[in-house]
Length: 195
Image 1: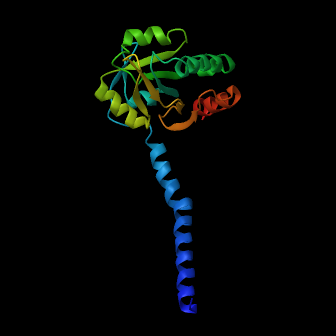
Image 2 (image 1 turned 135 degrees about the vertical axis):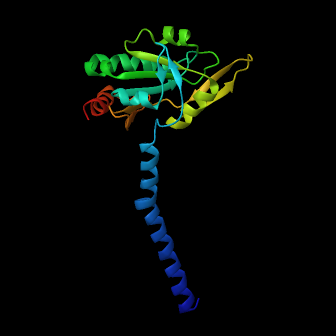
Image 3 (image 1 turned 45 degrees about the vertical axis):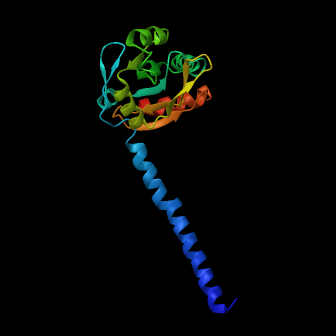
């Protein structure tokens, strides 16, 4: 290879590396920050089990925790409700948060069914509505949910399993992963509540 071609190749590699570095250090973090800053924002209107509207403005009524699931869920959803009860016992201020269980299965989860399902954990509100409004809500919170057919002709739901935390101004602060260590979860709750 001639020295001229080698120089061109090396400068090309330098340019590619600089572009990759710019993406990693500047562009990607800014894009992610915009997505995070917009979590929960959107033009959706659902109903809570207490008859109140659940909208973007709901998140601005104080610190809140939002998670998505469904009442026919065999393990993740009841486990998460149990975890919330544990967090409330370990950090009593968590009971003062708005805690919302938003169904990803509105065809089966009426407000009445949701109320019974979440009723054993103080302060948890079920949230449901039309499929159209729920789809807008899933998009606003960047939540994955999909029907999974079962052999018996029924279906289950596959869905995101994190609890999303918002501060008193409705800004996303963090997420609690499924079955995260309680001490770590409480630390994240404290940040959302106390700022």
